[in-house]
Image (cartoon, rainbow, N blue to C red; front, side, top):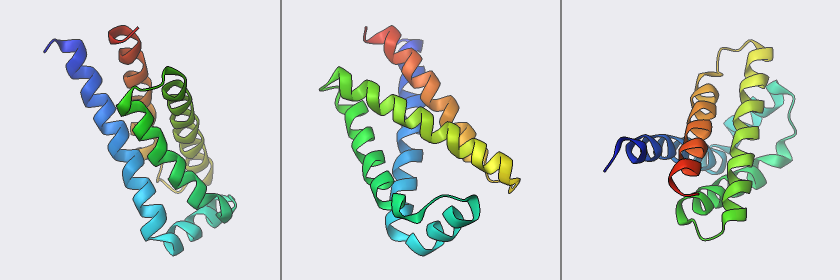
Amino acid sequence: MNANKIIYWVATGIMCLIFLFSAIMYFSQYEMISEAYKQLGFPTWIIYPSATLKILGVVAVLSKQSKLLKEWAYAGFFFDAALAFAAHYFAADGAGGMAAIALVAVVVSRFMDGKLYP
């Protein structure tokens, strides 16, 4: 396995784990997540759809069945992580670290995906 594939799979693994973990938290710890959303100024009705889309996005990226769905998943992950980081930054709650890691993982995974699977 060459270095590009290792970088791709590490970044993709980190990205998928972060988004799966957050989706699981959305389903299993709804009350806690709901309070966090309220503190950040987001509507709570979006929690379950967001969790569902995160799971579907991970499936789209890992399955590589549809290039269009994979691109939409990467775009969704990028915007989710970027907006989460911005929300935590402007709320000054110090909880944007995981969003920053997710953002870097999404960018690296997508870049390496383009190099390895054109």
